[in-house]
Image (cartoon, rainbow, N blue to C red):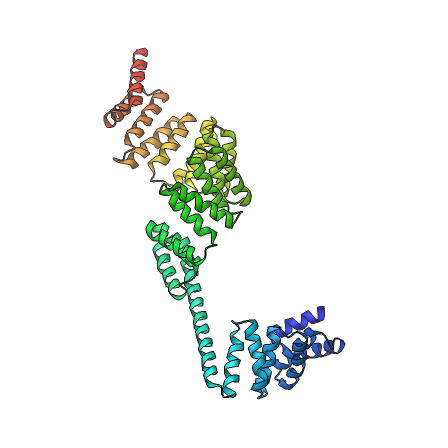
Length: 433
């Protein structure tokens, strides 16, 4: 068997001169073995010994009449020997067994033409030409689709959309490309276009699980809970280990006040895909919502390990660590968020509060001042002044604390916490005199 395997490799590499003595010797020892006869025919054909090839291939076809390649090769060498009438049934058999066998169809065109069956020959040529054009279109679509995937990954969603549409012009029935286009449209915020494209993909391939998951995700964001649940469940039925769909269904159940079922789904998602960061993040969040902060911290730590630049997960992890009163440990995730989002007032606010928990008052104050500067006139401005005022107060700077809280009260006079804090500061001020 090792010798025959080596002969197959040589034939595949078109090294027929080297294969010839080996297959001849093998055939002498196995004169009635199909593979010995078939590969001897292949080698003889490759060497241009068409009569010898026809002889052994006829024997091979007798042993295995439904072997596609044996029929094709026999038809091919018979055409080279000028015997189209004998070649015809073998070429037809090869096409019957494999209707997409273009090489067999091409030889059939010439066999029919040689037999004077011109109309049939033209019909087969038309089928062959259309198949080749389809292949060319599919190849072009594949090239454009691959480029679109790269552009989407690089963040150029509009270019990706344009290329996906060009790919679909060449291959309009490709459900996967419709799905990829939908994801690119999602990045552009074209949710109506995304929904329509997902429905196109669903019609083309009703068993493509990611389509149902993405449509469910859209419906979840739109508040269409029943439709979203149905699509998530369909995705899971089609792919029982589809972690993302399980996680999304868990999010829905969490929103509906069913934390036990949500947690079960998050656990399944993380078991089915141990590299799925969002599954671990969702698991940590549902555990935190139930006050199980130690468990939540473990799940969120794993999520951060898998995706170290996910600012939402880093922020959640830091807040859970704060709830556990692990002030020094909470600093690292909040610092990372501030590095990743240097222009985010919220990132500097969270880092400032974490620094205050660690009693690093100068750095905490610096972070809150930076948050206020970045905020400008944003809606969070009163909150930022209040937080800075409280940090001043806890650091012992009552004067600056009072000043910041007065600014906060001016910006948000209805905030009762600011009023209470000012009264506390006034009381502290009298006590120090």
